[in-house]
Amino acid sequence: MSIDALAAASPAKKMSTAALLLAAGIMIQGIEAVYLPPMMIPGAKLGLANSITMLAIILFGWREVLTHVALRATSVSLITGTFLSTTYIYSLTGALLSAIAMLVVYRYLYGPLSYVGVSVFGALVHNLTQLTLSIFILGHIGIVSLLPWLLVFALLTGTGNGSLVNIVGPRLGDLGLFGRLDHI
Image 1 (tube, rainbow, N blue to C red):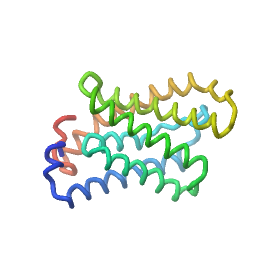
Image 2 (cartoon, rainbow, N blue to C red):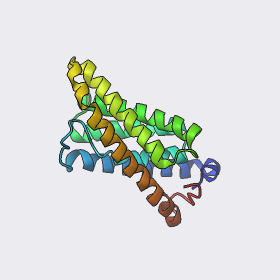
Image 3 (cartoon, rainbow, N blue to C red):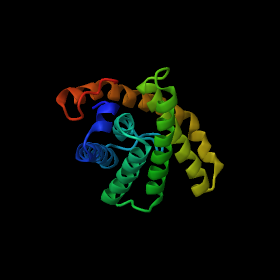
Image 4 (spheres, rainbow, N blue to C red):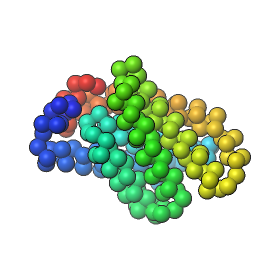
């Protein structure tokens, strides 16, 4: 559904679209947290749920996107048993700041930047946020030695997630789940 079509949609249609995206995000992040093996770089993950956040950014406003991210991170932490742990703090803070960054970049730079560019920017902000948090939580600056690896990983995962949105978004529109996503 395009932004204009979603704005004109009934509250039930908006709610069901948001609920479908939230369920998909929870499932993807949960599977990634539980079943995918840890990466060689501490704290690095594929961040596949970020592609769902990108779809939410395309379809909704900032309130709905930030609510989606907070509910997704909290739900997954409750499912995986990490609620209110440092893992939850890293996840929630990184996801919220990443979503804010992607909202700003999408709003002002989409066009010159593609979905890949928006996603890469979000991945960079997410990794930098978590690295900064870990310096404060662990109290040791040596963790900064992971920065080059995390930046490369953010570039790779951001590119993959942005490409996924380019591929999957129009197909979701063709299925009628979200109407036509003509602007993807």
